[in-house]
Amino acid sequence: MADSLVASFADEKPGADLLTQPRDAGLRVSGIGRLVAALAQCAHFFADYASVDEALSRNRGWEITELISMLGLIQSDHDNNGEVIFAPRALFVRISRILNGTADLTTKSELRLALRSDAIIAEAGSKAHRYLP
Image (cartoon, rainbow, N blue to C red; front, side):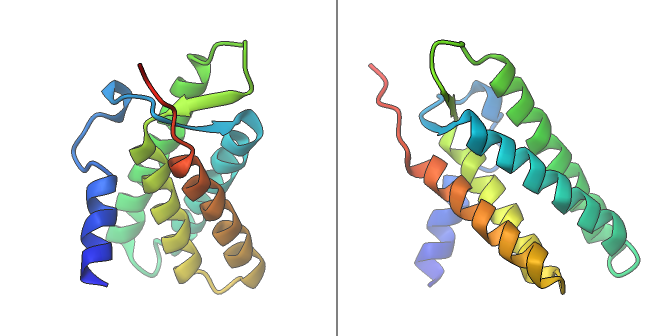
């Protein structure tokens, strides 16, 4: 289990500017839309969760906002010739972690199921490799 956690952490490329990383993974436009919506739900969750843990809510809120911003910038760079939007693999890995972590904290079963479902979409995006020349 420890090896899995270390590998997952490394896959996120902590500290790296994801906008400068190779766009080596991808999702359809509809999948990107689902991730933006899921991250927005996480932002709402952490706004309410501030009464439980203010520091965690502030940190997660900042991180979620950054991820939404990155997805928007990457989507705006998208060429209109295909339905797949390519992004750094680490972006999808980070999004999956946020979605699963929020699902672990919520007491709302519908939200938990939706976030876990969207985390699977993010994980699929991280595994849909783009082969670069």
